[in-house]
Structures are given as structure tokens and as C-alpha cells.
Image (tube, rainbow, N blue to C red; front, side):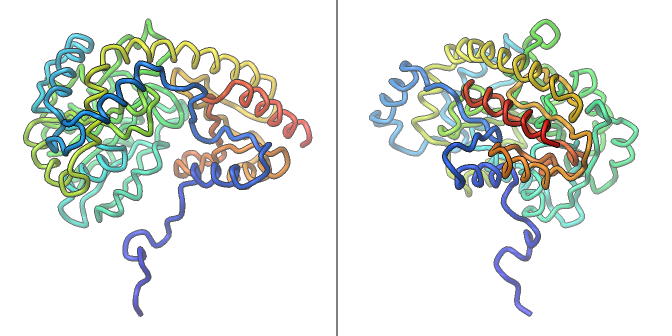
Length: 391
């Protein structure tokens, strides 16, 4: 029997529940409120628009760049990041990539060499890793976080074996928005130091941490100089500076690994968008200051959501997010999160993300995005309370 397209690797996979819920919301009546995905509630600043327009018309930005990324941007990173994070990386240890799925694919397709190779994931976590692990012909090994969403080191050590090629830690976590302290990350690095295993740290949300006293200048870069043989750090200007359509991310790793990943990256996309690279390079220092301003607005939204959800504690439990723009409550009365989110969408026209999209450790939860327009946020939470009160 012949296989259908996609069956050989992704037979059981469907559209991400995050995108599915957003799509369902858009296909329903116009007055549906979606708190599924992050959508900025404001326009990008004029100075950033102007910069992008300038480089759209610039001759250099019309051509391919070096596959590794323009040297000007990588040097700017070295100049700004090393003093900020007390790190010591250089421009040869940076790869500018196009988007999340691209760097995940490039990295795992480089690291995975045989079907028995394993990638260990701390979960719940970012959903898209799973499909890329399958595409790379590797085995996905789940390592659940504990009830407080911290690392269970006993379970972690039991999950490591001779087939483990990489460990993935999304930190700050999506969707729980807890932050694993660097001292605990270092414990992981020490344990895998002589095992030929890479730790991939996805720190896309490190600019959205609200407790600045405890988490000041949080980045895994602080560990890079000591553990560069096994540490890979991923981040995103698309996320950090609220310009997701610009498609521009970066990877920091040792020169040997960068050289190997570059072969796959070059085959997939050649280079990150040229005009995005030049515009980011021109404004990198300004964008840091700008993100702080946005963070203050996010924190106000977080506080508002927590206040409103406290009125619904009869029906849900939740941890207060330490950052970013998501909160991850748990239904007290059902474990069937997908069915319940569909009922909420049907009854009160509010779109939420079922926790099961983040694997079985997200079961019974749902995710709310509070990085939305304040009017939508207020109306959405009002509808959620109305639904709970009708139970």
C-alpha cells in the first residue's frame, strides 16, 4: 500500500491548536473575541518604520547577505550584549536566522544523525519542536516539569542515555511563564558536560520578565563562556521587539557547531531577510529601551488579568506569571481542556488555547494571551466569567 503525502513522518499530526483556535475565531461572527495568540495592540514606532523603508530602498539590502548574517549586525550584538550579560562571545559564534521553525530545523537536522537519536524536552513547552523532531527522524523524549513547573532533576537524569543528542529548555517557559534560575540550568550543563549532549536554551521571552530585581538582565549568555562546547542559545528580535513579521532570529553557539548548522541554514533559506538585518543593526540599542516601555504596559495587563481571574477561583487555579504575555490556568472541574475551550468558544464567543497543545502535562489547562488590545481583554474576561457563572 502506498503512503499518502506526509504519512512517512507526520501521519498523525494536525494544525497546531493555537493556530486552529485563532482560525476558528476568525471564521465565526465578527464579535468573537480571541485571546489565543499574541497580536500587538499598537503600531510599530515611526522611527522603526522609517528605518525599514530606508533599507528597503538601499542597494545592499536588495541582495543576499552572508548566510551567517551581516557582520555589522553580529558585531553590534557583541558590543551591546557582552557588557549587558557579562558574557564573552564573538561575531563568529552568531548565526542570524529567519524564524523559529527555521533555526529549530537547521539545528536538529544538524545534530540528529540516526533514527535512534533522542531529543529530551522539558514539558509543557513550545509545541512546534515536536514536529521538527519527527522530521529529523529522532525520538521525542518527554521530561515533565513538576507541579510548580520547576525541573525535576531525578526524572531528568533518568531520561538521559547514550542516545540523547540534545536537551531543549524553553526558559522563560511557554506556556507556564515560570523562569528556571541559571544555577539550575548550570546543573543540567554540568551533568551533560562529558556526554556529547547539547543543551538548547530557547530564551525568546527573556525581555518580558517583570521582576527586575530578581531577574535583572536574565540570559543564558552568562553561562556561555564556561559551557560553550555544549550550550546553544536561541532568541528572537521578532518577539523581543514586537515585529514578528520581520522574521529575524539569532543563534549563539561555538564556532564549530555554527559552521555545521550553517550548511543546513544555507540550504533552507540562504539568509535572513536583508532589510530586516540592516534595520535591526541600525536600531538595536534603541530597541532595547523601547522594549522596556512595552513591558510596563504588559505588566499592567498581567495585573489586570490576575485581578479578574481571582474572581473565578471557584472554577480555576493559576500561577501568577513572572513575565511575558500569557497565563496558564487550570480547570478545577474537568480535565478535557479541548472540549471545554470549544464550549467556551461556542457559548460566549471567546477563543482560548487548550493546554493539551503543550502535550499531556498541559492537559486540563488553557492559555490566555494578555498581549492584546485592552478592550478585547476586558470583554474577553467578562465573557469567561459569564460562562463560568452559567455552569
